[in-house]
Length: 300
Image (cartoon, rainbow, N blue to C red):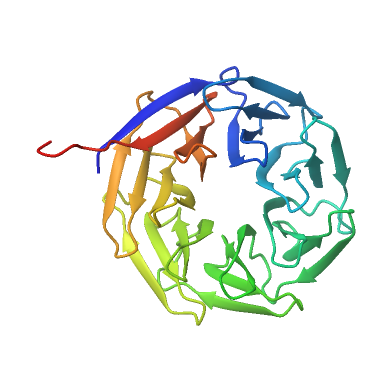
């Protein structure tokens, strides 16, 4: 697959662009984990930033069901909401120092999030009411979370070497991965009715069906530390390779392609399909990168 990769500086080096998502306003919204702020970039246009507590550690950000963006504050142990006009509201889960990390909109009109330090999955309504559900595993470090095709929320358990599912009633199912110490992080719903995830410890991409069948695909570079994953409009999965300074793609049948990023040491983390249809990744070095397919004409 031929691609064109562009980088756009959005912050000072070391500010830590970490996660990004498309907003309902046609812009990209992203977290800056090291500087404590939320950025907004209109593809091809305006760049702005909204300051938070510099020590709060904003981590994952997603579009909510209420025309706002929702994000986790890993260090401050809060869930944040930022309106399109930049107004920020913060909510504290009942469990102190829970370390919220992943967050995703659920099919029930609420946001679901992971509590890495508390072995819980949380649910927050758009008016700020929080419910917590304990996991049947100790020290699991639940990480990324996404809505599945079966009406449940699926999440990675980084330290328990598993994938979990929680229903809208709070019932949890755990699936153990075949590869030991795989340390899954990012997870996304595919267009094929399955969930796809990255194994940062094993250098693999995983696929799990709603009934729990798991397939693993080794990457060409097993030391690349894949971190996040997303699905594009065509159903191809895209992922970041944090330690290898690359982004890669995998088709539903398992064909893998990887692409070097133009700037060394850029530390790619979050990845999403942007409002312009291209794939975007957050680079902790201080930039966002846009990856678009190159369409070849007849005879090319």
